[in-house]
Image (cartoon, rainbow, N blue to C red; front, side):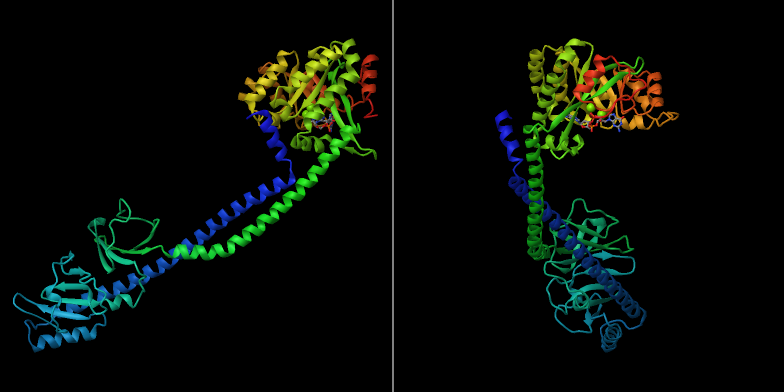
Length: 540
Ligand code: C2E
Ligand code: MG
Ligand code: MG
């Protein structure tokens, strides 16, 4: 992206109204999508439950039906009357009478047939059975016409056939339009509708002969397989998912306003936060103008000789009322608003103004400057630095740069800029090492000279430094990678000597000195004072 375009985009992101709008639109989208998903899930759940209940009722009734049809047939087969005569009609009527689900009973032999319900197209005129078992033959859906009295299931044994009426199935369950109850035969190859219309078969490819889930949900259909024990056939109920549309529209009616209200609220919150941040940002801008920012220098010592070798530049924000704002508070904010660039420039300029002469007089002394993530992402710092060094006639090796692991988000870009700084003669350090994500693999590829072990690991060494924790491992690793090590936050002599014995060359911390004003730091150096025993006072 063009730098100008990026700059414009950047400035947009600092407008509270723009941020609030973005937040509102984003949260509205997320809320709507989320709640729709939830509603959809609920509708599907309800659908499945209904289907399960319907399927179970069907199965129960089918078992009753088949049971009675078989019993009726057995009774007819067992009695002695054969041939169409008055006795036969009476027997047939009697069977249909005593079995509630036997609607029609018929006797058939090669030359005649008779039924308890005399009519034209009696059961003898139906084609070959759909299933032929050893004892019983089954006809499924002998008629697809929606006549309540027409046979829907028929069983045959010997010369007898018995059938139940469609009404005996439909009185149990109300089949919604477009639904079908099917008997699936031949291991899923064939499906015969018992109730409802013929369906394209199979509804899913391939039709699983066995499945643990009773319910299959496709885009348009719910398919319920009834758990029967018979391997010869499966009972399947298919229903279109038409209700989904309607239910979703109803859900939409209350989801939309609620989501919009919530989104407006979130937008409002973001607006307030952004305004607040902008006001802190504004304050910081004023602080820079009014010279409320101060640079202090915390001396860094050689742990062996206890000589001061340099210092780390640390910012302070001293408000007119005397209160100090911690850099831990305003630096991250300045990183967000982009003011950090101005701040870094200020630190570099102030440092050379204050210590230029000292550095020229002590060529082995160096000052370490903290860089923010965005300072590392562009080559700007190198240019600013070169101009200042030239102006103050200070050598590049006297300025080191500290980068935190957080500042190395885009390692590839950072690597180039760090390499440029090193090529110019500066030292590059990784600050707060061990607290970020910097892996060994990364570390090896990074152009750095030195690791600064985070204070947390030094704290872990304790007063007496008997337990050593992770610090020695970090030190060994750094040495293996040929990196120098600085320890920060040394507060006890035991820590200093342990670190020194582990091969750490340099350290800083309250044991030696707090952050000093420029005047104090210059005094420390020019008097060549050793600070092994005496601790200097803080921030005069
Ligand atoms: P840092 O760079 O890790 O700085 C070390 C911090 O530890 C400093 O806090 C320092 O005062 C403190 N410290 C040093 N020795 C001891 C000790 O023995 N005990 C204890 N408890 N603390 C000790 P400070 O000055 O508050 O700075 C906090 C952070 O703010 C710095 O961490 C650095 O990340 C950031 N910062 C400070 N100045 C600048 C700056 O000019 N630019 C940028 N980008 N960041 C800065
Ligand atoms: Mg630092
Ligand atoms: Mg640090």
